[in-house]
Length: 387
Image 1 (cartoon, helix red, strand yellow):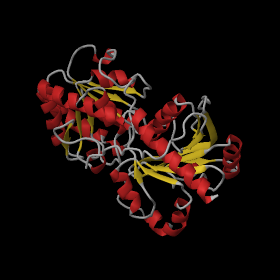
Image 2 (tube, one colour):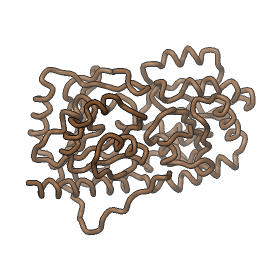
Image 3 (cartoon, helix red, strand yellow):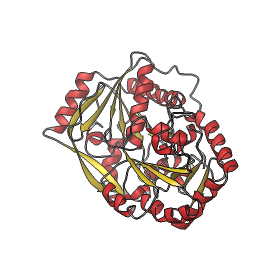
Image 4 (cartoon, one colour):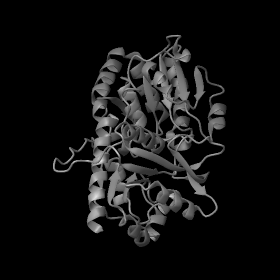
């Protein structure tokens, strides 16, 4: 299923300049992941339109406070859903969050992953602000959601607007809870991610290069890519693999790659990762479970062909043979063959990259923010009607 943007209703004028918005998220920088990217670029675009936006999130380590970011509590990593989730802890966490939200005099409180402990779940309290929730995840089942279905449904009922980032995410959460879900996709900054960016030093040698970008944890499939790499190198001379990202298992993956040649670990990067997308021969994403795939959008906007797992969340964004070659997840040989096909066929790379670049325009944050701001307008109207 391919996700398309919904046209905003024409009968309502969305709010813009002067609106005060709090985004509450358990995940923000220096943590790496799609929720962080979503919150960051949505905030940027809303601020560009004259809104006041604060991102309320726990502190990770000794994170230096940034303008527009308010830290409440401290974040601890916990294993979850094939990855590493985070849990905020702190003395009188609920009271501190209430104080921040009250002092901020927000019109809209936008909660990412609303049923996630601790901050998002604590933010689902009725106040003067309209409450909007966005669901970002895909999962096959949850015993906890089943056990606490009624109690959590009462929390969801407090929301004035409910968003899922894809049909895959909507299907996952709607198995347990009822709400008027609206599908609004993730976005991409097409000014940052674009063709023709400067060449990183690791790519200046001109060898065919595959790029991996993501958090280094089991769900993102880096082990499968490293298993496939010797097959790729045997078929494509001088091929290189550049890995951009960090995570708790980086040491494990570096040990796995120790006997391999042509593998470069670049670590976590900020905006400069756009240079790597722009100059890679192809972007490879062997993720085993996803609700959407923001990195696919970043590669598309950079005009790069994609090699990725054939999973439901990715099918919402790309199609096999259109922007991407899609292969079964956790299959090193299939992944290697896809990589060899792309690296050997320049015409195919150009075709997939050009289609992806064209289609990425619909996901520009300007258009996606239009959709989200329209949800804000609906939520504000519902809140006023409820008194």
